[in-house]
Image (cartoon, rainbow, N blue to C red; front, side):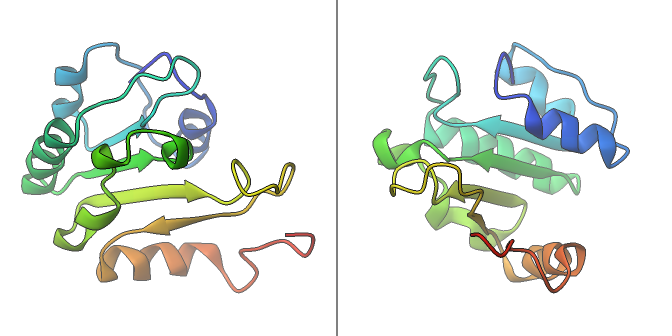
Length: 134
């Protein structure tokens, strides 16, 4: 959902996914993989939790996945975070240590998701997922 931080689209394209930036939230239901930044970077747009959960349920019903980058949620409206809603599956929440913990320049984050999706992510990361400086 754009305009937004571009690195997620770039990574998805490198992984072989067809990437399309959409400006209409409702268009995301057509995707197999929907990636949102909430609160958004650069404009601060916030998508309400209820809308995100509805989208996640619709994607999950067809085997899709909702990824929500919450790197700026530490200073955002925490009531819209999906961090506590990942156990049903179909949702991955990304968070960052570097933004608000005095770790400028350190690329260190984590993903919250259900156990099965976590196993699949772990298999992709390998044994050295965190660089030495981090």
